[in-house]
Image (cartoon, rainbow, N blue to C red):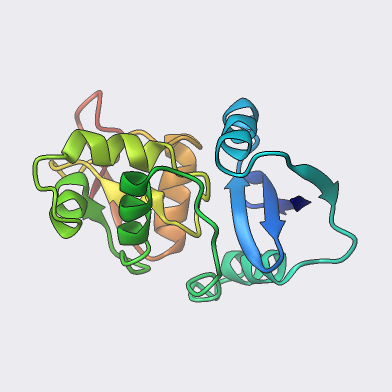
Length: 179
C-alpha cells in the first residue's frame, strides 16, 4: 500500500499528514513518529510512504479549517488504524460538534461502556488523526483540560479557535477550565 505524505504549517505548529487515496490515515504534530510507524506496520503491513505530488483535498480543507471554516474538516474520510474498541471511541469523538466538549464519561456512556472511562482516555490518547477526529474536545469530569498528545497549549488554542470559552483555573493540575 502506498501512503502520501504532506506537511502543513498551521497556527499550532507543523502538521504531518498521511493519506491513502481520499482517506486521511494520520494527522499529527511530529510528536509520534515511532508510534505512527508501529501503527502502520500493525494494521496495514508493508507500506510505502511517498511525498504527495499535488495538494490533497485533505490539506485544502485543513487550511480552510484554520482560516475559520470550522465545518471544513467534518466530513473528511478517515481510515482509522486501531482496535475495535479504539475505533468505537474515535467514531464517538467525531460526534462531538465544533464549539462543544465532552467528558471521558460521556464518551464511555455513548459507546455503551459506562465503566470504561480510563479505557476511553487511553483510546483518546492513541488517536492517530488529531483535529479531524477531535480528541482535543474531550475534557475531564471536573470540566478541566486534561492531557493532549500535542500539548495543552495546542488543545487550548484549538478549543478557543472553535469557540469554546476557557477561563484560568486556580488548580495547579487543571491548567484551564471550560466556562
